[in-house]
Every structure is written in C-alpha cells, then in structure tokens.
Image 1: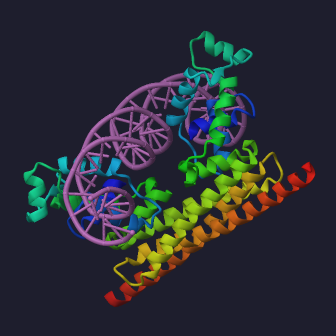
Image 2: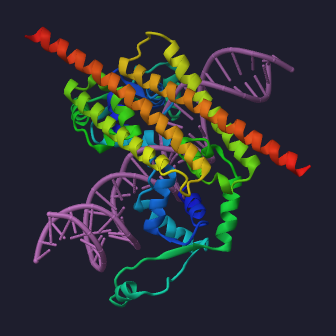
Image 3: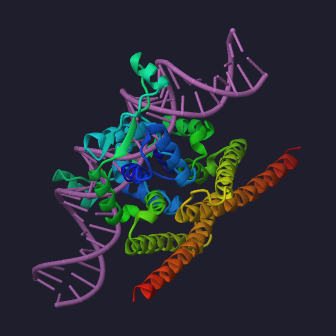
Length: 189
Length: 189
DNA sequence: CTTCACTATATCGCGCCGATACATCAGGCA
DNA sequence: TGCCTGATGTATCGGCGCGATATAGTGAAG
C-alpha cells in the first residue's frame, strides 16, 4: 500500500522522504500516517527495483556544505518510466485489500489517476464490504440481551452508525460517477 | 494488544485458539479479526511467559483417538495467577495506543474489568484524539479549493462526519459514567 | 458417496509501527 | 549574545500482526 501511495504521489512532482510523508498525511486526512520506519525502507526497495530514481538536486550552499562534511542531506526521488507503469498496473489490479479501510482510502486518494470502470469496481466492492459489516453489527445488536457487555454494545452501535453513514456516502459517490459516465457517453456518440 | 485481549477473554473461561478468535471477532464486532498468524504465536509467547497454562482437557473419545494417532487436537488454555495480574496492570497502564482506533476498541471491550477512574481517562483521552482529527479535517476542508482533489475532499467529508459522530457518542458515554460515579458516591456516604 | 462448510492447529515471509538517534536551521526570548 | 524549542530531514532496530498456505477431522446436505 505504501509503495502504491509513494508511486502515486511522485506523479505530482519529485520529492524527498519527509515531504512525501507530509503530503501523504494531508491526502489521507490524518487518518493514516505511515511512519518513517516504513517509509525509508520502502523508498530503498523502490530504488533498488528501479521504480524510482534518486535525483541529485542542484547543489546549493547549505547542501554542498553538508555533503562535503559527509553529513546527511536531502535525497530527492523521482518516478522512473517503470515506476509509472507499475503504478498504472497497481491502480487497475483490484484485490480484496482495496476494500478494507486502509486500502480503500489510499485507492480513493488516487482516483483521478484511475480509469472510470475501475473506480466503479472499487466503489461497489467497498460498498459490499461495508454492507456486510453493517449486517453483522445489526444482527449482533438484534440478538438482544444475550450476554453482551454494555460497553461492547455501545461499540457496536457506533460501528453500525458509521457503516450506515458510509453506505449512504458511497451511494452518492456511485450515483455521481454514473451521471458522469453517462455524460461522457452522450458526448462520445 | 492481542496479548491484552487474550488475557481479558480468558477471564470468562478457559478456551482454545479457534474459540478465542471467534469470541474476539464477536466482541470487536467484525471490525477487527486478529488472524491466526498472530494468534498462535502470541499464545506460545504467553505460555512461555507463564501468563497462561495449557489445560489438558478431560480426554474424550474423539480427542483420545486423535491424540493416540499423533494428530493435532484441541489445546485449551487457562489464565494463570500471573496472567490475571498482568491483565490488571495492562488495563490500568494507559498509553497513547489506548486512544487509537484499535487500542481503544479493545480497551472498551474489557471496560467492565477496568476501574472507573481509568475508564474515564481512556474515554477522555480518546475524545481528545478524535477532536484533534476532527479539527484537522475541518481546517483541511476549510482551505477551500486549494489543489485538493475532489475524491480526497469526499474522503475528508466522510472522516469529518465520523469524528463528529464519535465525539457525540463519547460525550454520552462520559456523561453516563459521571452519573454512575455520582450514584456510587451517594450510596457510599 | 462425495463434496462442502466448519472446526482446529500451525508456519513463513514481510509490511508496517514505535522508539530512538542524530543533525541542521529558524525564531523567540532572556 | 546565547539558549531553547520546534520544524526539517534521514536512518535503523525489534517486534507485532497479516495473508497465504498446509494439514486434518467432522457432520450435513445432496
């Protein structure tokens, strides 16, 4: 998931690790942060795989000084052609992980680079997933009384409200996608 | 977290791995599953630490057959005195991880075994956390237009609704905790 | 009589996290 | 002037938890 996110972000512009992480948090709305403990190793992995390349930035005073003293300086990465390709593959290859909280969030964040039909598949897959959760919670709350702790019940109540709300939200998104798709078709023919 | 959850669950009754996992999913309302890939190793760890002990069940027909043929059979675990102690410590030792989605959920699931003052601390800590998230999303949505992708904005809208709802839910829980605390005081004096 | 779904235990590789360390630089304030 | 805090910036380590996979017994449906 981080790999996908990095590749997606680097479409905007070349960036260094710290910046990447900040943009990522903004994008995911503080709901997901990706620690440096996973970011830097992933960057290495991508580098070794040739999906990104290090772009030595125009050496300026501060950095030159840092480098000449053997200190660590900014390392800027940019997307390679293979990286672009890989991102496109990943965006289209929708597995079940695209439907869980985290995966769905990341996919959605890069929807503008995702083909319309794939967007639909993801939205509908997510809806199915959330509906299942909703039904699970409903039946759990339905089996009234039944040895369920009061706090647990409250937890389930909140979960149920959240899923109901998200299903409605998804329905709106799906409907608006359909409208747009229809418009495109009308323009085409 | 899994360790805490297992120790908590075993207060109900001795159980084997598969059962533990099922009870855990029920408890967390399908919002958290804990795969076997983490459950069994954790059970081992707890066993080695002496926090749980294996309780050879009264050998019945099916199991005896299985055992005598050298096959795998049910392994039932029960809480040791040290395990009980450890759970009590963990329930009271509230770190920042008790406020994130996952940690909070698990703690709440064992609230009935948690002292009232600690319950309060957790509830209020969680509220602070969710309020921060809410404010982050509000300001992100407030900075109107500003290079934010349409889908990303939708994601933030949903996140904002969820945090608002959760804060209200927490307020109700906190209020009801306070009422109960007052009642207890009235009864005591 | 076979196939399916459920019960049940276990391992492996690896993604990701939290803590920690180190270093530079800007601004506030004493 | 000099100090401290907070942001910028890169990096590593141990360990938790996941998904995939293997294995195997059981009962019910068809």
